[in-house]
Image (cartoon, rainbow, N blue to C red; front, side, top):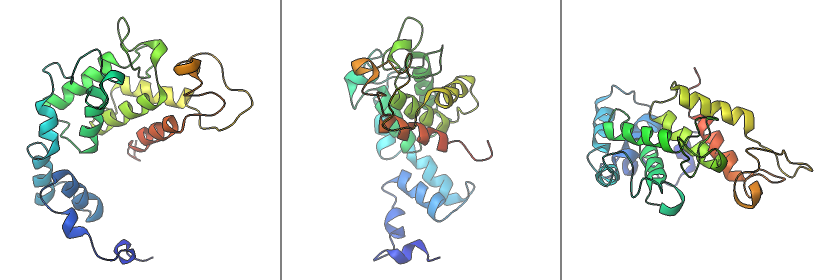
Length: 218
């Protein structure tokens, strides 16, 4: 099998290792050059993620309670500046999960978006947790993916969310009779946009994304 770089016009490694984007440098060192986490270059890149570039700019706008913009509008009305969106970007950029600000964002998401009765995640908060009647498949996948990346895999709340995916997520297309009842009647047009006779592709992709973040040995 050919080396991956042989398919390219030129080797991009030097570009990917430039220090102006520590997140990209970190991924290049670990995923492409396969350096271990104890390597000095890897540790240096990981540390710089929190002090240089986009991550510190995002965290500087975070409220002390762990959210961005307004607490109640963490998803729909604050695209793409609200809590959910900043949370996703921070996870994509490999922000340090030991940082208290990251942990606060995780707890805010769990306390305000997750429906504690089912484990799925909702776009509005209900009386005590995420609104049971406003859960979304794609949002559930995205939030679980971020939480797993930030070290919450063994948290019972995240395990409950994973169980929700296993129990309710559909991976079909164009079926004659769609399932009825909750959660298939949630969302616009009584669930038609998210489920209907076929599953919304974003729900499928985001939930598979969450599952693939789980280490193979788990």
